Length: 171
Image (cartoon, rainbow, N blue to C red; front, side, top):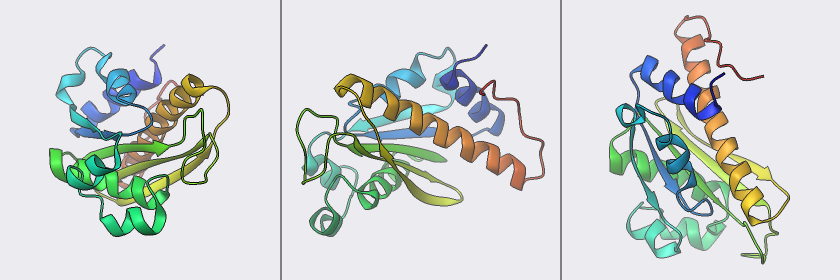
């Protein structure tokens, strides 16, 4: 049975689509999960680990006003990070992660507050997550969530195009 990452890489290949990443709290784990899949180089272009705020602003192009008004732990920042990665790396889709993995609160937000972003041909959105566990568990759950978000988006795109959904092997 395919792992979620394998199923996602397969779906991207079938769609002829590429993906990039912009990661903060996951520190490159999304990229690592995707590149563990043989043949992922056909669909995975690359990513930016933007752990510090100035990298989000200077490299990914997150507007300073987003940081000032919403903070880096926000849906607005997750959307801007995904848009920035998509633009910077020229991919059909981009995934982003930002949030608080712990051990301490950040921007007044509790550990486990996470936002994942998804940019693609149909637009950009962010999903809020309220996770629990230690730092590693929060990071792993974030990676799972962002992979599931893109898998769902690809299935929706197939449906909009009038194609039957593929059996992703999930659920």
